[in-house]
Image (cartoon, rainbow, N blue to C red; front, side, top):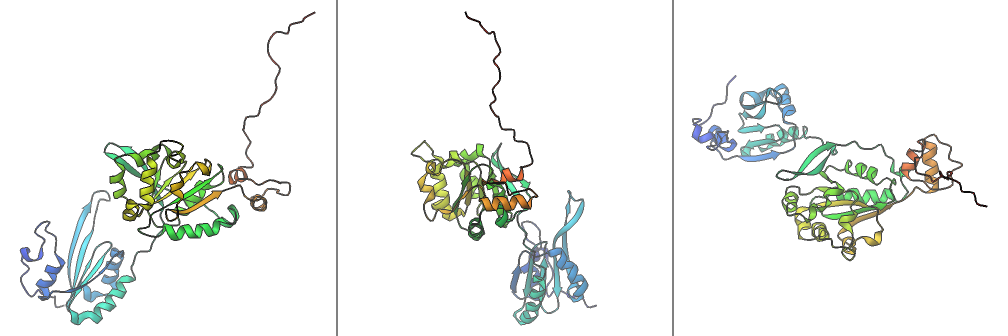
Length: 359
């Protein structure tokens, strides 16, 4: 085997980055071929799988390699940093765990096109988001903690009224958009499935989601919020029971509304691309009217009891006799029908005391 030799001496000051002593790909290429290369870069690649495939199916790429590994103390093993494969045709392939770059002479372009097609076979598959981040107050400001969530087993046609399906389709299209800000308002009686639908919705998009507990909704009026928002661009914020945040400024002093307005359709909205899903149970007339302006409000839906036909269909699906049901029910009532109703019922009881007889 004839190993490829560099055209010039591999002096450390020529091929290594002077700041961190890492190999510099352009310098390394020039040391081998004395030509400034063209470059093709591909991201989101399963780098380790591609390396294993090269070593098995493309032995000509392994004649000369330069490997860099680092020790992972958590896994207690050496892990891939990057590796260079040097080819005789004036091609150098650099691979790390998620990217592949091909450096080449213009004359090698046809060969490089074929190599790029092979690389793209190892593109990472997109997965739906399985985690949601919870906001909390930390020692150094606002912090997030990742929590894994399960996508509920849900049939929109069966578990919700007929108009939700089209609304859901529109939601997905907007939520998947990058650099798009806006507000979604979900409201309705408790037990009508708002939280369940939100979990279903956010597991259907590949985007970071941050949950803000009701008690922390006031962070939108905090000086710390600007830095936090800048660090979480193109994110979906979910705020449940957000009445205090959304209530009209005509009814109460509510400075958080101004930040919410700017974030969903103002200068910050255009810059950060943050979308907000907020739920509430208060009367719609109590919500600040500026939040419902076209362009800012991307979607609003009232979750109601299931229609009588839907109620009966879901009860029968769950094994209950539904012919004697004559009123619409909420999802919570249907899915907990077998449980005892512990609501307080007033009963009459005899008074305790003395009975006075009069003559």
